[in-house]
Length: 147
Image (cartoon, rainbow, N blue to C red):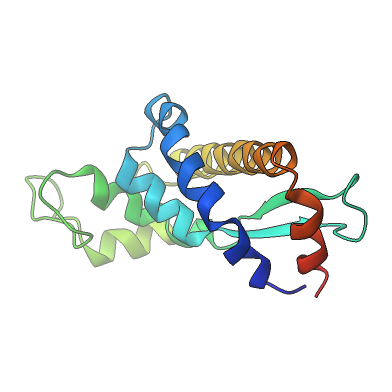
């Protein structure tokens, strides 16, 4: 599947990003965290050969790799490096432990965050597809996605 179709929808994505802010505000993610989630997403068009049946879907397979980093974006004044707070110190080791499910409080909350990120990404794709359909661009995007 060709990815050059993604450039065709850049304008619609920028508009939707601004409108999608209400969903982010209502979620457990802040805007920086959602931005990180978005960098881990890939978008695919399932069944682009048939635009009436085609669906824009998120590929979230890379999202689990960034979930441990979301906590770093929660802390004021840090830029992804973790801080030396009054608890166990944070940083790289806690991120690695969290990714392996060995840290305290990790596993279950990481799965909840992954589920929420997946739900938001699916909603984002649905809204983006609706936007493309209503503007009459969906069929041309599907055609480009066919390669």
